[in-house]
Length: 94
Ligand SMILES: [Zn+2]
Ligand SMILES: [Zn+2]
Image (tube, rainbow, N blue to C red; front, side):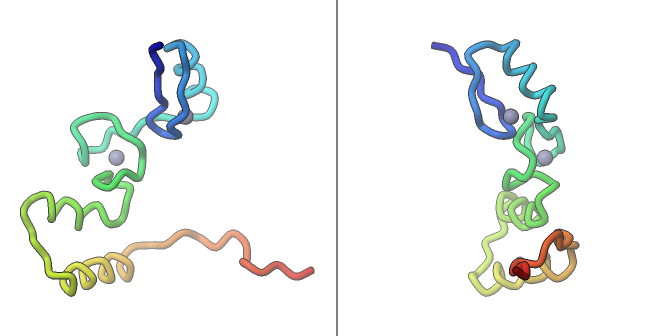
């Protein structure tokens, strides 16, 4: 049986029209940034919405870092890109 997979959340539909309806209803639009040659799930390893995509792209382009250099690059990314905003303190009072 043919199954159509939503590239964003991974759930499957048996009918193309159901998949289109699902993507419209939940806003599951595949990302089309130049990290891949095809539409993909936002946040995939080479997707530009992912902070470490530059490191992954450098490795794909032939960079062979030692584990120390790789750790250095990832720390650099962590220190120079914005994190996620704090929405709730992890230990709410009760
Ligand atoms: Zn979906
Ligand atoms: Zn992307």
